[in-house]
Every structure is written in C-alpha cells, then in structure tokens.
Length: 335
Image (cartoon, rainbow, N blue to C red):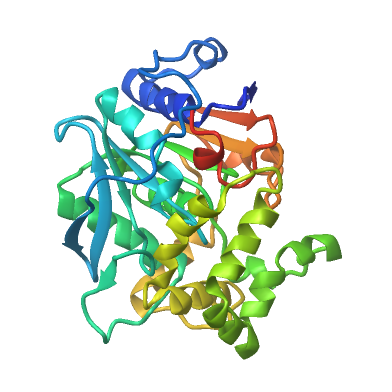
C-alpha cells in the first residue's frame, strides 16, 4: 500500500534526495520515509539568484539551453520545469544537490529561454509526446543512460511519460500532482462547472482572441497564473522577472497555445508521435520507484492522490507539503 506522509514546509530537496536513495538501495517503506539521507545544507537558504553560465547542446530537433551543476561523473538528476515557469524553479535545489555529489541538469523546454529549434520548418508542436521525445534526445546527447527525473506541471507530465514508456531511462521519479498522463479522448468529457472554471485559460487559448491575448500580455498572464496556482506564495517582482525573461523565446506563445489546443483536439499533432500518444491514451502504469507530491495550497487543477495511486505499480509514496505550498514546490519549498 502507498504511504501518505505529511511533510514540513521545506521539503522538496529531501524528497528528491530520498527518491534518489530509493533508486540506489531499491527499498521504500514507512520507516524509510522517516529516515532521510543527510542534507549538506540547512533549509531555507533561498539565496541563489541565478545559475552559472548556461550550456547549449544540439539534441533532436532542438538546440537545448540548460544549467548544469555538480560533478560530471555524479549520479544524474534531471529537473524539468512547467508552464509558465522556467529553470529558476530549481535555482535553490540544484546547488545543494550538486554539493551532495549529484550531477544536476535543468533544461529549458522547447519554447523557453535560449532553447531554439534547429530548423524553421519544424512545427512548433506542444503536444506531450513531443516534449518527452525532446527529453530523451537531450539525455542521449549528454550521454545519460539513466537518471532520477523530477518535475511539476508540464515537467511532471514529461517525467511521467518517460517513466511509463521508457522506464529503463529512469532510476526514480519525483512528480508533483501525481499521475499526469492524459489523452485527447479523456479531455472530451465535460467536467463539473467548478472544475471547468479552473481550466479557464485552456478555453481562452482555444480562441484566436486568447492566442492574441497571450501574445500581447504574456508576462501579465503568466504572473496571474502564478498567483492563482500558488495563492500563498509571496514571490517578489525580481523573482518573477527572472523567470519571465524565458517567455520572450520566439516560439513560446506558439508552443503554449498548441499544447492546450492539442489537449482539446483542436490542433493536430505530428504523425510520428501518433503511436506514442496511442500508448499514452491507455494510461500505462509507472513501475519505477516514485514519490508524488502535493502542496496543501495548490490552486491549479489537480486530482486527489487516491484517484491516481493505482497508476504507480512499483515502490511508491505520496507526500503532502503543508504550510501554504502551491503548484511550484521546488521553488516555494526547496529544502
């Protein structure tokens, strides 16, 4: 049976380190959940304004921009951001993991930061399978056979897909808001009105007015999403501005709009991803060691843990972060 553990406010780092330990030692239990690997730093530093110089590498259809910290021969940890956020969600987590000996890699997804398409002819496709293939290609380009993968929002869905379809590439997974694999068919079903209200931006993006509005007011829109998704997170202007720069990527709006339109069946994907999407539409189980996280003040749409626990068929725990933690736990509660 999965364990549900209520965690103190500062706990993303210890959860991620614990997930890595589970992968190494192959054991997950109630006792293990209460005995954490030693942390090289105390909680609540929040002092890292940015990463060191970013790196670039060609991977698949992209030239990927990414931050890297820690020893090159350390166990790899891949941290994936969501929408509309960026790599700075992990700016406090990464250096502490690096000091603990992990090779920490934080890429900008397609449509963010200085990640660019190699060809102007490549469709600006935001469908989930495309983002997952980007990550596999990125791992291949870096020579990473297997990694601990963590993510939230789009990054969590990305991690879920890789763990489900390519489990041999994942040592362990930490996923905010649980099992995030979906399908166009599932999205055809209407939700109760209050649930539909939470997806207002998806329906806005389905219109040309919405696409034009996001293009014109990208930063204002993103800030509103931050405030709604994490209503108790008191981020300052500098914190938001640091991430908002990533949305100036020339493909950001197109990728964002396509992603949400694809979910509703209003935009076509690329044929090479059809077989993968068909497999995902069957909601495959995830057998790699997994910890799922939820914040007690997450204002974004999310399912209750009991609704998805059965999707995790391997060693599994769920952790509730208390203290007003919203949709972006690695930045709101890094340690």
